[in-house]
Amino acid sequence: MSNGTFDFNELIKESKEVLVNPKSYFSTMKTTGGMTEPLIKAVIYGALAGVFKLIWSVLHLGAVSAGIFGGAVGIIGFFTSILFAIIGLFVGAIILLVISAICKGSTDFEANVRVTAAVMVLMPVSAFLGFTGHINLYLGTVVSLAVSVYSFWLLYNGLVEALKSKPETTRIVLLVLIVIVVIVTLAGISTANKFKNSFENIDTQELLKDLPKN
Image (cartoon, rainbow, N blue to C red; front, side, top):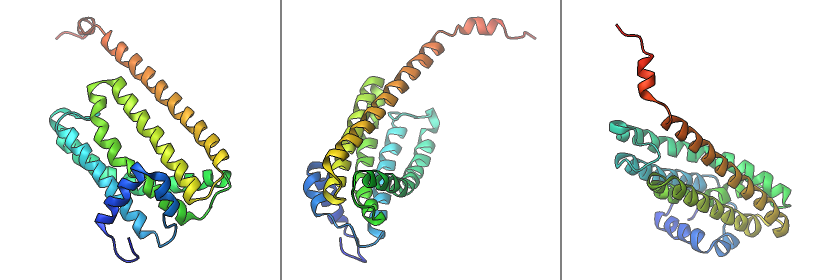
């Protein structure tokens, strides 16, 4: 993609390359050229993720289908997905810049923004796989963790190949972050199960008895 223009076909090609051959992609990725290109990427990825969320919501296969209001919730999710993609691009770039600095890599903000935008290709992938959580909580969790771990693999290649960080330090930092993500995810499952069990154990008949009668 050249300056001043945006080639959607080139975006598709680059997205495939990031997913299947991240080392090669990041080793040749441009780290300069302006903020417009990565911003457009983020918006497109966010929009695609929003489309999948909308579809799963309408089909009642998403994390939140909201009954007859599923379509409305899905439309809201579509626009919030784009908004979160834009915010996430710059927040993620700042976080990546900090990691890169720790790992003795580039602290150029634009370069970090471009790597972050490339990794955001996983947004629509994650949204597409969102229906697995509706099928089974554990299946959805495993899929979500798999996507998260793969995102760290992409980040590793982005840091080492594009931002020139030290491989050994980068591996250690990202492994620590992976462990934290896994722990937080498992803790979330435990909390969700406790809430579910507590809700199922509520005796609705006893609750009705306590209601005042007219």
